[in-house]
Image (tube, rainbow, N blue to C red; front, side, top):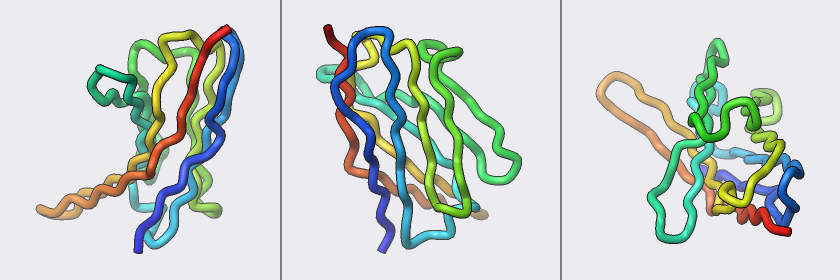
Length: 120
């Protein structure tokens, strides 16, 4: 059974930092593209950052470029999101997603999310 478990969320003041972690189990982690999404109340789910499997290329939403960094440790089956210079508009539930496309099939798994609140 595939499980993605996020941790590291919490309450932080504007300008502060948080590091989110997502530990994966039950899948061959290294073949999956790993994504961080977020969803704020009343807003659509937004792709924040993505990291490919082999090669480790990254992609970021314009709103977080230069502030957030995605990384992964394939030996630990874990993906991270380092968030710096946090703003109130970063407040959301952050969700980890594992995605793999093989031939005509797509495999996609989600964590339960971790709340990030940026407020003074």
